[in-house]
Image (cartoon, rainbow, N blue to C red; front, side, top):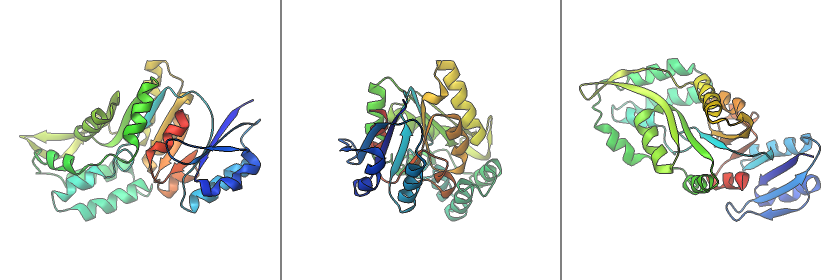
Length: 272
């Protein structure tokens, strides 16, 4: 019989007890954790989970499975900032680029077209600004602790970003991830050209990377955890196993197994 797990803010635990039984309090996140066995997904729990999320609280409902690899989006998921907006600020165009970014992440714009338009605004900036941007990037709460636990359990961790290689590389290394995949900013004479080249890491490419990585590592795609926040993460979430939204855009909510609205330590309750 399949085993299930529900993770939810304790104030809502009584609402789920009739379906899930007794709960324990997580040593990592402080949330209520239910574990039980049932024949199949319970649609009453699904509906109640959605109500809790729409009320502005974290809630995750999953069928338990082994987790061998974890795939994270970077901007606004692994880190608090959108790197393209931080770069654009150096060109005095942060408001315009922020608007385009929000619309793209909400699924209202074609990702590649929006990427090209935003990158064009960076033309002429010296790559020395990378260091200034690095200083403004902050890893989101709980992710370092999650990464340490995941690594200790032998899981592989990947950063898959519609952002840019210099930042993905630095964040990936800081977190002890095994690899990263992001867009290449074109540079000439130590200056940004305003274009990208190579494979564009859009939604389809994120899913392709997950599938190719799992195949190369002989990992079942069903034994993966995917965490993201925007529309370009949907394909990767669909290709993987457990899909979690971190402060997700509305387009993601009904297509995930749960939502985190505070701290990545909640993910520790999934893998432990």
